[in-house]
Structures are given as C-alpha cells and as structure tokens.
Length: 226
Length: 304
Image (cartoon, rainbow over all chains, first blue to last red; front, side, top):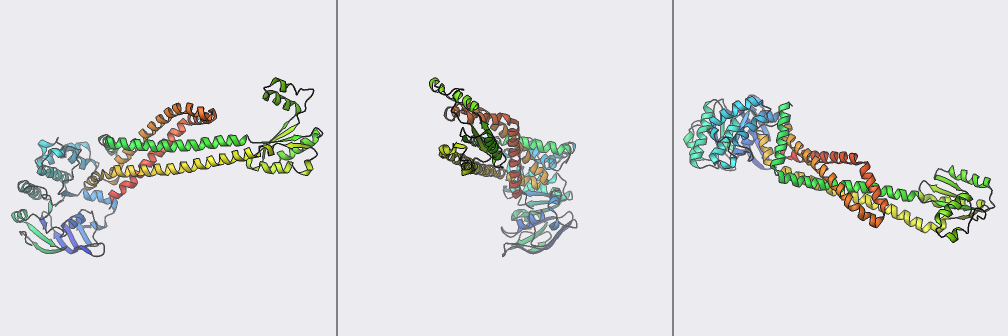
C-alpha cells in the first residue's frame, strides 16, 4: 500500500534530514515510527502528506508515485490521507461539529452527506456530546479526538499521526492510542510518529526506528530501543 | 464549481469578515483613505490642469493699427495670421467695437465721455490667440517686422510680456507639482494597502494551513478572501464617496474665500459631473487592488 524507495532529503547543501529510506507498509498495518527529536520522523511524515518533496527517491501510495503529483492534484490526494498533529490544528472560531463538517464542506460534499457522516464520526471518537463546544472549551485529549474525527471524515485508507500525544498526559495519551488502534482494526493503515517510549512498548506492534535520518531497525512486535 | 460551493465560499467570506471585524474595519478604513487620496489627487490634477488651461487660453496679443492703414491691408494680415498652424484665433475689432468695449470698461463717466462715436481715437485692432501661449513671441516678432511698420501702430505684448511669462511659468509649475504629488501619494497608498492585506492574511495563515490539510482546493481557499476583499473594496468606496461629498460641502466655501469661486466651481462641477464615473473607478480600483494583493499574498501559504 505504501512503499518508500530510496528516499533522501537534503536541506541546503549539507544537512541530511533523511538518507536512503526504504520502507514498505501493507494494508491494515499499524506502524510506529520512533526516534529521538531531530531524527527525521517529521520530515518523513511531511513527505507522506506531500508537504515536502524528497531530494531523491520515490514514495508509492496505492501504486502511484506521490512525488510527481501536480499541485492541482494535491487537494484530492490529501482527502485520501488523514493527518493528525501534536497541536491539533483546529479552527478556534468553529464548534467541534463545524470543525469536522468543514473538512467535508471544502471538498464540495452535499449537505445530506455532511449531516450523515459528521455525527457518526464524532460518535466513533466519543465526542458527539461535545459537538456544540468551541475548541478552547475542550481538554487536550478531547481536542485530539476532534482532530482525529476530522482526519477520518473522508474515510481515508491511511491515517498519519505526528506526535499525537505530545501535548497530552499519560492517561489521555493512551486513550488516543487506543482510539487509533480501534481505527486500525477497521482496516485503516495507521502511521504513528512518536518518541513516547511507554506507548510504543505497550502497543507491541511494528516499530521502525529512525536515527540521524536513517532506519536503524524495523521490527514487528517491537519495543522502543535506541 | 457548483452552487453549494459558491454559497459556502460566500458564507465563509462574510463570516470571516464579521468574525475578524476589527481587522476588517482597519483594512476598510485604510482602503478608504487610499481611495480618498487617489481620488483627491486625480481630481486635483485634472482641475488644476483645466484651470491653468483656461487661464492660458485667455492669454492673447493685440495688434493696433494706424488710422492710415486700409481695410484691405488689415484683412490681408488677418487672413495671413489665421492661416498659420500655431494660431488658434484672430479676431478683428473695429473702431465701433473698440468703443463698445471702452464704454463697458470705463466706470468713470467723465473719462467715458472723452470718446464718442463722432470723435473716436480708438484704433482698429486684431486680437490673436495661439494654440500654445508660449508661441506668442513668434507672432509678436512677425508682426513687428519692417514690412508692417507702415500700418501697425503698436503691439500690446511688450507691456504685458513679464506678466504673461510669469503666468505661464506658474501654471506649468503648478501642473508639474500636482502631478508629482499625485504620483508619490498614489504609490505610498498602494504600498500601505498592500502591507495591510499581507498583514490580514498573515494573521490567518493557520486557517489557510488547516484548509489545505483537510484537502480544500486552492479555489476554495482563495474564494473567501476574494469575497472579503470585495467587501473591503465596496465599503471603502461608499465611505470615500461620502467623505468626499461632505468635504466638498465644507471646504468649498473656504476655498472660495481665498481663491475665488473659479477653482471650487471647477472642482464641484467636475465632481458632480463625473460622480458615477468616479464611484465606479473607485470601486474598480478598490476591488482590483484588494483582490490582486490578496491573491499575491496568499500564494506564499499555498506552497506545493
């Protein structure tokens, strides 16, 4: 489903953020990408969502090299890949419901579709009862749930989470990870970039360790080892 | 793009305008100021141009004939002058017409009575206007030549030369200064509005980023900003016209006091005569400036 082939990213002339990364992720997998800060996790995530282009190499998603996507194709690509960030990136002036509905509105979805999908997704992440609240009335964990709901509203095949628990306490963090695991069970590939050792150790799923821009280890049912 | 999208984009633009009302207000006011400055200077340049042109068009030279000159000789000279390309108008003033003018100009009855139809010493004359008043000297040189010495008594130009030259210099100076000021102020205004819009968009860069991340097309991201920009433009235009209207009402009596009615009449007539034109030009400038600037500033946040 996702195939990263010989990807390198060099900033300027000398800073190598990623060096010859090769990774294959199959349908239904839950992969944690771990490593210390500055290892290159975020750079990899940015390339997977077409925020940045690699200096060399290919990134194949469903057989298509996304490096070659034209600018006008990007919005359509982004609708197929859900993304969750550490800082939630919710629109402060919209309610929980509006934030999730917005992702559908911008894609020219019909009102019936919005009315049908948004409550279901909010229910899935356990936020339906808070649908009329504004983001600043929510806890960090709740904000992240809304952000996950928004990422899921397009029914993506891939969900990428970049440090989704970075701003959360351990209990809330684990709840979010459990939510991601549940989403993964429904068949969505989940790619979790994190440096939270406790979470990775507890998940017991595939772990890819990146350090200094290179893949150091790739273990199924692995733990966080540096 | 379907109807639903257009409706959503319009709604989003209106909602954004209202939710960021202080920023919207500031942008609208700056836009208003810009439009006011541009309009004022453009109108002033035009009015100054028209006024100075009018003054220049009044500058002429009179050639007075000796009583011994025959009508044929005068008529020949008149035709000769009229056929020149740099001459705009040649008017013959007979003894009778000169007397009429004398009667109208002289207020003092006793002096007036010195000249009568029976005893009229006033000479016949030609009044010559040139296309460009700066060329009057050439005409003067020509008619002052020896070939006309027998028929011409006097050419009025020499007496007024200094005043005429000064007037010509002043009018062209005012025109130039007006134009320079207009250009400088217009450039400053455009820079200010450009900066304001960049600031408006900068404060919303997170919003733009989120829209991009959830898969909004560029069109959908730019649309609400265009709607907002149009609102700024329309409101600023209405405000600017209102202020201009009031200002003209207040300021024209003052100008009348100092500069006489000619300038203000020109200004008011121009403004009233071109009200709709000015309004639409302002609207065009306002909306186009805002939209172009918005699209330009937004591009930075729509990378890849």
